[in-house]
Amino acid sequence: MNRDQKQIRTAANTVQAERTAQQKAQQFAQRTQQAAKNATKQTRKVIKVVRSVIRHFLAELRTLTAAIVAGMSAATAIIVIICLVAFIAGSAYGIFFAAEAPDENSITVQQAVEQLTGEYRDELEHISDTVPYDRQEIETNDGVYYIRWQDVLAVFSSRVSGAADGAPIAALDEARLDELREILWDMNEVSYTTREETVEVSAQNANTEASRDTASESTANDSGARSQESNEADTTTITQTVLTIHLTHKTPEEMQTAYNFTARQAEYLTLLQDPEYETLWAELLGGFAAGSSEILMPDTTHTPTGTLQWPLPIPGSITSPFGYRTDPLTGETSYHDGTDIAAPEGTPILAAADGTVTVANALDSWGGSYGYYVQIDHGSGLQTLYAHCCQVCVTQGQQVQAGQVIAYVGHTGRATGNHLHFEVRENGERVDAMRFYS
Image (cartoon, rainbow, N blue to C red):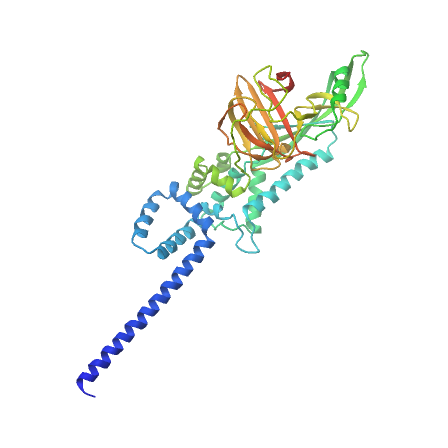
């Protein structure tokens, strides 16, 4: 073989090698792109969370990522983001990745919350079922009847992932569920007391209210009563055993002290309590359902005589009035501290007056027996409460106007059917809402 032939063959081999390398590169690129597409499809929700997290707590890292991604292909950029996901998932922010169970040995946050809320509800019902009483009350140390699940999860996440031997919490197994259960009960203590109470009730009012009842919706404080006739014909003396269930809630800051958090755990806890994450927490827990909140004009024959308007866009029928009355089911005199208004599930609930939302429980379906509920402060000592909702569409601190949709009728909490349990409070005292209407 002469010199020219050797040069030609060498050149041909070189071309072939280059072609083979190009083919391999193309195949690698195709596999990378396909992997990136699959990763994008599988981690779409996760990346959405990452973007939200990075926007606040990884501002510098976001800048770095942007610089890196700017010089990469789309496929490689997605791989970088997935690496960031893995990094964040191993931190306290891993709790936001527990929206889906990665394997059969894990459960989602929603499943854990549902199970533990059920255990909490069972404990309250066990007290109600085993302690003799005629009337039940619930008192709290902070005016809140529900479990602040985002606070419980923030403490849990910070405690576990921020420890010296911190572990990822993007997946909740039985061991992690036990830790979460411990924190739930440490932050939400339950106790009870009983007392005897004697009151005089107008027999005429009790009979009048009994005639108005056509059905009875069970609410947090419905109960029977033992009675004896007094010497006066127009009054009835009611002697009751009152069961008071005490709910004591502890704040994340109190738990930080109780658990002797390290500096890193404390830092995680502060970050997770940022108000920016309110919506993220709600989406994770699956309890917040934003609906329309347009201003509606109630179609009702009830005309306000005071400062409140009717809380539904339909007249509705009062199935259980406020105060003492003869229970149509038991035939005994009982006390009801709100007004129950029957309405179909999903009926919009309207703010009865302008005010500020002080409670918007859309995460704890038991809610201390109120279920999902909203409480509004109207100023001058006047508050209203709307219980047993199926959905809530306002948030704590939100300013609302009279007639604005704040929630939807349901039967969450202690309720036997769809209705609105409507309470009015003046200077902390529950009063009859009907005095504000003709």
